[in-house]
Length: 315
Image (cartoon, rainbow, N blue to C red):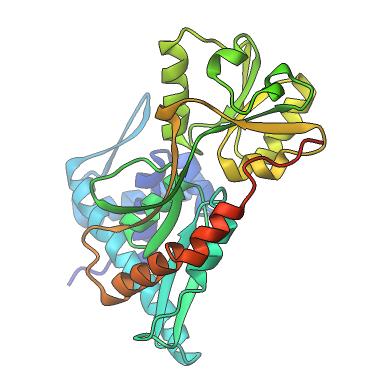
């Protein structure tokens, strides 16, 4: 039986995730030479080259791709073994890992977390938050059982259940001429300062916004990239700019002289979805998703969604 230290598996998986030794070393709290030594030790034990360095960074060899896929499962099962052991000691019979995007509607998250499963009365739910792209990766690797994501990138390996949809919103000063209209178009903001999500936050929205911009020959005067609505609020106020945000982020900052309007662009419809792995056949996942969807689609939930204001009052 091959004896490979768990640290070597973690090192290989992190380098494969980051495709960069420096970033991987930082995330593992190691020096780069120490990480390089671990990868060399692992390659010596396996008798194959796992990573090839080039001018663009790090590339995975074919043997590496096969190894990393299984290494991720090993680490996943080890992590689950630890969680299940601790949960059993605390009296829980099952543990479920759920993730949600920071821009997901808190009401939807609370409805999901309030779901009760008759078949698993002592279920313990571990909740976490991350960008939608990272949540999708976490579901694919098995670190999460399901996640509530916003504007996620479609993946054939994931089941996707849409639970909400809304237009992209634009936030600007309440004194802006665009505030006179119930909705706005991209042409209203030609040669303006645009504040948009960094591509690592919402890659699909980022690409669709600029595809539409190119199609209509609409260009901003300058660009600022952000990760949160709060960052966008400062930039909009400072530069008299406009921020393109998902609804929940726009709601949070549309005050103190800022207002929001929906963008008329069907191609930029933003969907909130519950995702699971296609090959996850566990009864717990199935029951959790069913219970969550019942709560999300119940008449009371729908009524609550309808009662939410479309626009906050402008300050």
